[in-house]
Image (cartoon, rainbow, N blue to C red; front, side, top):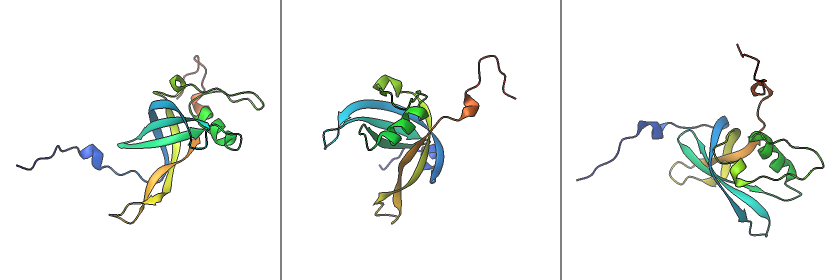
Amino acid sequence: MPSIKIERSEQQSINAGVHSAVIENATEATSKAGNEMLKLEVKVGPLKFNSWVVFTTKNSANVADFAEAIGKKVVEGKTLVIETEDCIGKTAKVELGPGDRINEKTGKPYLEIKRWLPASAESDLSSDEIPF
């Protein structure tokens, strides 16, 4: 007998744009070119994404954006270290956009994480301030 588990929340669609994301897992890895990187499993609403943060000089601006998105302080000219423990469970803002891969059923590109956005200054309230 055919059966299916009904989960209406999985049917919600996510569009391109800025969304809140949760990093569910992070592991250290090495790219095909031999560069250090973090492999991330990221959840945006009902969707799961894989994302990679590659540690190269050419990519340092993107690494800095990721670090700021997860709440790490970035100082120009200083070495930045990001451990897997710094990532797991963190909530960050991401910008989703169309990727290079095309969905054969719909003919539309799959969404992917295009960039990590720094935490907003509004969330940096000191403990004695009450937001209204």
